[in-house]
Amino acid sequence: MKKILPLLKPILLSCSVICFCLFSTEAVAQDRFAKVEITTERINDSLFVLKGAGGNIGLSIGADGVFMIDDQYGPLSEKIKAAIAKLTKDKVKYLINTHWHGDHTGGNENFSADGAIIFAHENVYKRMSTDQLMKAFGRKVPASPAGALPMISFASDLHFNLNGEAILAFHLHNAHTDGDAAVYFTKSNVIHMGDTYFQNRFPFIDLSSGGSVDGLLKSINQVLFLIDDETVVIPGHGSLSTKKEMTAYRDVIMTVRDRVKMAIAKGMSLEEIQAANPSKEFDETWGSGFIKPAKFIDTIYTDLTKDQVAATEEKEKE
Ligand SMILES: [Zn+2]
Image: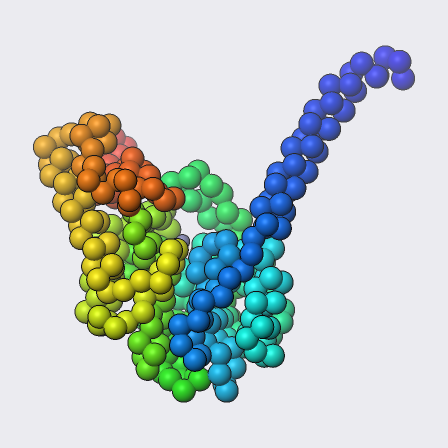
């Protein structure tokens, strides 16, 4: 035993370090969610927005039951349920995911266990049911458990007639991801944009999940055509917004996209373009969120040069 002890020592030590790290990571995550408070904002008699951590939650409450858009992170489900209980005695009956990211679908399993039927675009189901890699952050996301998966998926659009109005969920092609949906409450004139819209911030475009700069711009234009000056726009992240603000968002993205495109045509490298700072007049406000200016430029550059890169890689193989 005496001989074995010195050999065991580093193993025991490394085990305790790993255990401590795992425990502390878990503890940090728990602590992070423990501090989160869910706030409720009323839009009209039947529509609400809940905020906590993660994507904005949309809520329609009425005679037909509770219809919810997105559900943030799993550890927040009890708090979200408590916030809903202050508005109605009913549980969530219908739940729609605007896309597959965990800050919008993390509570799926908990709400499904409570009887909610989950809807989403078919690519949300595909991505949630298989392991994913979010290349922009080098983050591996394991497949979700069966209980978290959408039960009903759609390819193009889906109509609900609930709580006194037609609610139209429609797919936005290759925008933030390849499974985005916007949800439009036609009578209330309120639209939830999911993460195709970050209010007053540069967008996060998840290229490895099928998102694209041009797809995002097309999607925003499509929605701008549909809504009017009175529409209340619920962004994926940020405060309640308007058509005017979303038009400014479209213009910022388009301006920076065009400048990066021109720089690529001149043969500039990513580093040279970042140094030339093509988003400079927008950075102070629009670059102060989750996506910093350098990351935004990187995303546009990577997206616009992907065909070129693929062709070069193909040639090298030959
Ligand atoms: Zn997202």
